[in-house]
Length: 173
Ligand SMILES: [Zn+2]
Image (cartoon, rainbow, N blue to C red; front, side, top):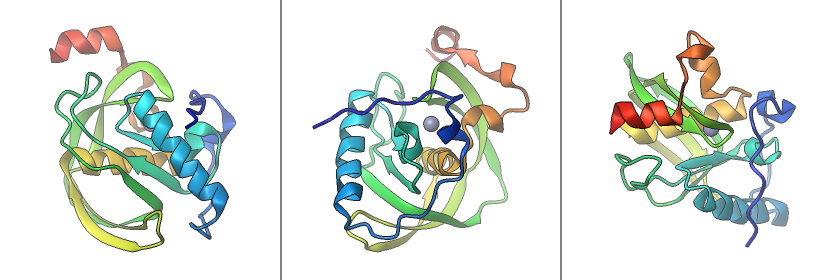
């Protein structure tokens, strides 16, 4: 069990387009998934993307559960998402609070599609196609952005729309 170092915004790898994974059975990929599970759980995150630990591949984990960082998060068993695609989106976007393990201490209201149809493969190579809504759709869009070199800060009209964690706690609690 290894917890990896989470890179912070400003690292070049977080602004790069990540490459597709061509073989999920590779030992290096399986080891990366194991390490990401340890890392995201230690950091109490609801998701983590490979570029956040310096690996520029199209792979992320989602693991939503109510926590100190996200009190209203729904329960989602740990899901490994490889080579994801968004096939369709709702017309509507909605604003919701986001933070990011690579943007420490900041929160912002970020617009995301409220519903998305997605496809991806999991850690066994099995294909999935499903419709995601609400907070899970939000995590998926946030993590997919990391694979395209985008953090939630770039989704804001103005970088100063992000507030610090203490202010956020006052507003939301
Ligand atoms: Zn993030």
